[in-house]
Length: 293
Length: 268
Image (tube, helix red, strand yellow):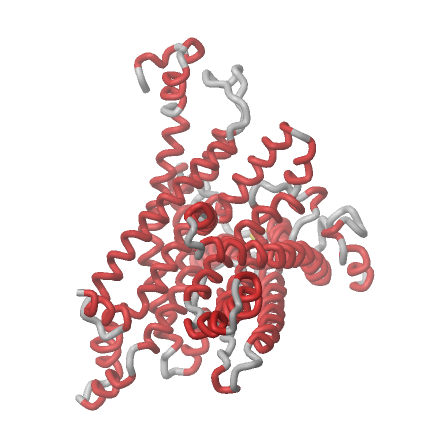
């Protein structure tokens, strides 16, 4: 990185550190922070969408849809989320391959599940065996995002379901009295009003989502935990220009501080957002704001 | 091999009693049920001890955070912030590598690099911080009349805390604390997926479920079994905490007692 980095062994401490922290592998570590942020940026809206679907399903008039929505919410809350992560990553992968297998290889006669093997025809493999490396990485990342969205979608559904029920029923009755049908009441009255009730729960969920991002490591994505373990392990002079002892503790300390800073920042931003949204609302917080002003 | 034999062999496998070798091929449903159930022993061990010990530390932290003296308040605030603001997964990793370094300082720290002690310490700190925040919130919402009445009776210091503040705090915090307990038991599954090694393949329920899923490449059997065990555990926790909740509120009239919700809103 820097011009003075040609012979690290002879450098004074601070220069050595500067060179060490800008090696190619460290750059990968910094990039993986980007992976985490990308995951958050994609997952949060997707999970919200899943949650909205789940919450709407849970209050649907059609009974099987309602049962589906309620089961979706209930099951995810009763079981450790990490079990879901480990489950969905394989389950989704096998489901995709199975569907492709049925479509692409209709004349395949052998069973897909043979003892301990899951066998699909070569054309149905995901990603294809001859695909370049980046396709594998993107596919792995996409399954991870989908898994996160399913699990956090259930949490979000729980929050939104509560928020929908918190909207005063007088509002909905008024809408009915004006002759709006179910669909109109839902989209024009219920949905715009529910956000202020949902926001405390959703901001809590955002915090939980941030704190769940290290689990990406378990899904096989090369994220910050992966790199911290990789880079922190002791290095001998034979393999690297920058030998050091076991520094994994310090790497994880840095991750700890990164997450603390990130949660603190989100907290501040969310508080501001909440203050803006409650402005002029007929809730206790809105009333308090009015009195303070 | 009959199912009773399998239970004899693997029922206590997670604590090192019984057959040493894990099944390697031809996995039966019975084996999966038994081993995953045996792993639950670890989840219960971590959860119960961390919760029981954390309860007292959390009370101390909550009182500390509510204290007017900054020398007590600031450390409590920071402790709670650090453990609530960072992912438990990272805490486990940091804890494990930290304990590894401590091991080189003195052999006293040896047990801490094993899961049974090290992970327990991390879980203990973590649940203390979360519970302390719940208790602190409850402390803040103790009705003013209660403490004023205590003052009027001439109570102060320890008797005032023990007889008035503490029971009221517990009563108010209980529904949220139940939720925290459920999530603590859920987070015990992270132990063997962070740095802590499963010595001689003695792992928790998720460790075995993952073992079966890896070997059979079929996630649709072991994970639902694990889910069933955890839903049962959750129901047991709700049952026990519900009984305590009843006891805490027994002086209130029937209608004023807060009901325990099966699916609380707040999540960790």
